[in-house]
Structures are given as C-alpha cells and as structure tokens.
Length: 67
Image (cartoon, rainbow, N blue to C red; front, side):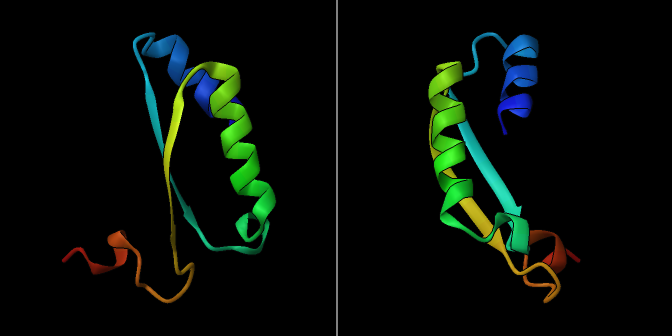
C-alpha cells in the first residue's frame, strides 16, 4: 500500500484522499491490512477515506456485475 501511495503521490502531487478496493483474499483478510492502509496514508499525507472489500471468487464485486 505504501509503495502504491508513494507512486501515486509522485504522479499526482495534489493527491489528498485514497480509496482502497481489495478482494477479500486471505492476505487482505485481517485487521493488519486496515492498519497498514492507515499508516501508509499517514506517512504520505493522504487521507485514508474508505476500504472496500469484494468476494474474491463469488463474482459479486463491481467488475463481476458489469455487463
């Protein structure tokens, strides 16, 4: 997350808010990912606004319902 925010902040210096979208896979399925998002956002001076999770294999995410 920090690497992503660092890259985005270099490309878009005026970036002020971040929205994360993750599948609910095992590596993202913990409080650590939420805490990491907050810490990365604080380190980069970008407000962590929202963290969306989707079902990784159920086809229920936004991409899965687009026709």
